Length: 261
Length: 278
Image (cartoon, rainbow over all chains, first blue to last red; front, side, top):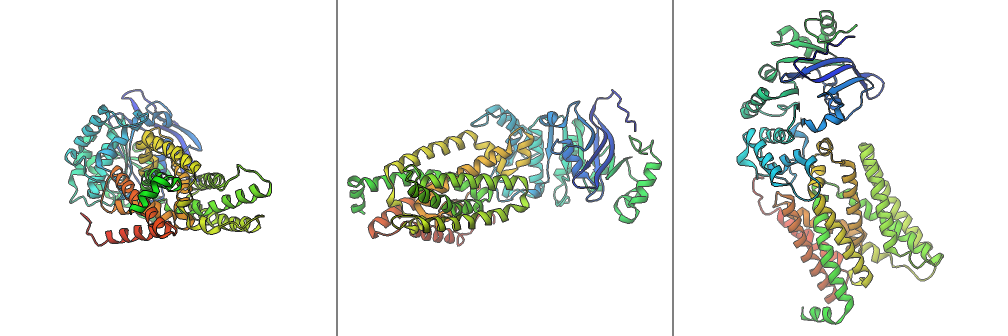
């Protein structure tokens, strides 16, 4: 059970012997991995495999049953303010009466005492909208935006937090990427300048954004890119998942940052 | 019409009713917009109905043990806050049980209220005025209570506007930015509960929800920014409340049903207007 915690380059996320359960069965079992600064890690795996749970643990919204998580050298709850979290746009009430800029300003809520946002906050929010290419739509209502634009607004909201780590939950789910190429371009640009951890089912996104892949199915293993066709089939076909799990663990060292017994 | 304005000048009761209506409109516009946006109209309705239990208990114990400060309004405030707290707690703890607890409080309050009123000693209690409301029964102390409540509600919303909006839009993200989402959600429920107390006096338990929700629902058919919806709902509430008061003075009848019918028709008419981008 040894995780290699090297000092260079700096480690942004470090999970050690992490386990979590909602009821009786373990959702995450003995999870070990780390993310280095500037790295772009894609988290893939079957539904119910624990991807979202892992994300919630990293945000400190859930407490691990055992094991340890460090984000930016702190506990997740303490590191929260430096994490930019991007949920799925589909989760939101599309008729909620709010403008793009007002949503992005939520990224500065921790700097707001009472009353209205300062000019400085508004400038930061506009800069974030500019970075995702939506400066022109700042005053547009949320309901008037396309799926991809909504997702980019949520990315801008996370950027307005001045994050050191960006966590994205299925940013391309329910979005027609043939129409929404700008979303991918935004992510590709961001990958250049920050550490990204991204949950996705979209293997095209993985190949364009990811440096490496973390396969989560109760246990985890790590793959380098590009993924072989065999690996992809194994991850996504239910019958072959167990075999994949066994074989990957057997051949650790190369692929997984952490050893399972 | 001129008769009404004359009455405003000469009859204090009408003046009180008018003043209470004006201040209430501000509160209803603000709170109604949040209730419609956050989609918690059913919670507001449960609080309004549950309130009859508090009103009944206050009348029963007030008369039986001769406690003068135990007024119906006191009972309404205490029970509405209690029920808002219970619903909020359940809603935050286990969302899947929310509808059950809402239904239970709704029915429990009505049942308890009817029983208390039935067994209250002394002269008959007019159940109808609680069910259908009557703004013409506004006393000076009601006006003072309304203004106080108005100041509290408007101050809270002005101070915490952005945080309340953020919690309504995305509770989880607000929490990640250091905003105590649960506290702000409970604050919203408390403000809603206190507004329902005022509404019940104007429109009664049965009609109160319509008066809270219809102006904001009408406004949100046309506007896509919360502050605009709030402003328009305030204006609509002002028109409905004042118009209703005039009518009920002129025709010497209950205010609530008139207001609700007009507000419903106006809301219905908005569906004839094609909305931009829909």
